Image (cartoon, rainbow, N blue to C red; front, side, top):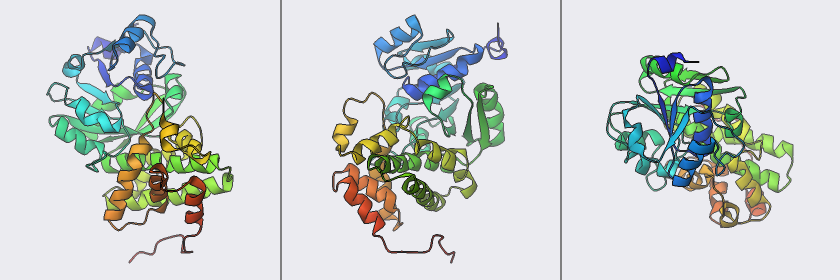
Length: 339
């Protein structure tokens, strides 16, 4: 059956065939739309095209026949809309290989660039200056999206409602529902900070500190997210929505989260190097935590949970000692007083 998108000759490109990129490609192809999926690995390109599977990053998914993989990123250059789903630390170098051109570029990585402290939109503006940027973020486990389970996300558009009108019909599906925002900073900060906080919640799980401790950590972590976000120009209502609090609750509650799993391993006594060894998928929070802690220190901003995760990843103290230090902090009012 020919869809409206196919009749109009519209194809969608997805840059990155990791678990999340593959899941997005499958969601977009669920109505028969043609999706061009770029993968770095030649063997993965061959597998996707031959068997419609991705055994390396998302073995549970069977991909639609309208998903076509390519190893040549230049093939995506003529497409009017691209979703960039490569790990945050590689976004700039991958986008540098994309042909110049005006297009909608939807950023789906959640992180802060190490070394520069830049959010993904700032990285993309340098690497693809002619693109109209948007950010897609929210509570999304890849295997559930690929399976067609109901999912809602924030789609923050730098081009406002005009860009939303272009992108939302391309991205929305019956089980994949985007909500509009024009707050790119809020959408980015929510996704980046929650990854670090998910590591902390995993530590609580690994140390078997109980559900009370995890709930408290989520609430106090959200306070840190809000503090950092507001200082960087995000809106509070954005961070209380899908891409902030919603994503935080999801990834702080399940080993389906790579960041939560990393923290659980740290809590059980593994080093960061041991916990990360041999993993095919990236726990973005591991790279984000040290740069986020550095940004907070430079701004004289109190983010003790983020700081604790950064210290733990650096091997400066064992997990139980880091938790003890957090519990020994001076007592204070829960809500900050406005000046």
